[in-house]
Length: 373
Image 1 (cartoon, rainbow, N blue to C red):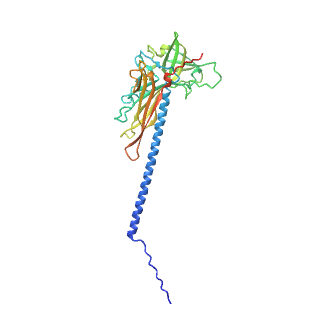
Image 2 (image 1 turned 90 degrees about the vertical axis):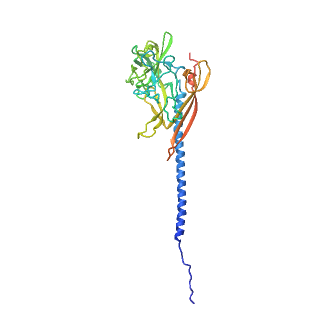
Image 3 (image 1 turned 135 degrees about the vertical axis):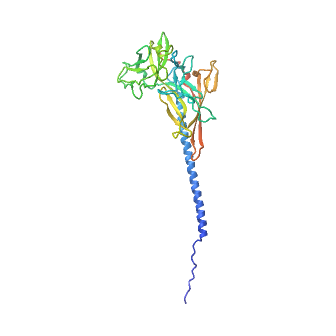
């Protein structure tokens, strides 16, 4: 007997089923791609924000470090500079141009009057920076001053070569031990064009001081080293015709000492767009003495300061935007607000971060009550 085999006919997917499956698969794939894209965007956003925060915090740390050093290595108060000549000493400039105030044709900033020009260890600069956001108005600048205590100034005696003070001799002290000497002409640490030097000596039992600007980088391989403080200089400090508080007035003093000081100014500058169209990049700049400014951080869009200081009657006033009506020497606390931004990928919007801190100017009020005998 013959057995008949009955098999079910094999069948595939219909065209409709294939199309439905492909559609569902494409939807799932599109959803996965969208999730992946959003994940990438979120990762980029987070890393961009983290990088922005690091940049702003690094800029803030450098700024706070300099502010906290105001007056370090120097006597409290400040120092008078050359007056009575045809021009006033200025700051915020290098050897070729000026940078402050940013919002106008920069011509440099005259030192505060006391009643003549006076270098204070902190000098506010309300509304001297660039305007990044029109609604917020101009940003602030700040200038702090402290001494270079790392260079071995005590290894040299100081004398003036002429009565105008345009040439100063630095002579190695013969009583020094046989240690490596950092030379005044050292290309990295020695005196450079644009450096500012505070000279102090005594005359008639009175202490006198002034500040001069180096006009030619010190050279030479051995002591003594002659350093030029010629007139005119870029900042107008070496005024041979000064009638008070200038280099000519202290050349006859005795026991002259010298120390390099750092006059450091922070401000915001908007760097032009290289393409020539569209907004430029706001940059936090740091300018020292008569040297060219250097960028600290890009995309810093706001910088403001508030000061706690005493008035002439000894009353403490808080949150002042500048030192009008009071001496900058009476500043005791500085509040700092710095804001950075970064562009959100694929948009014209920005994300931003604001950091605030308070700095005490401890060196501004320090007095050594225990002098060595």
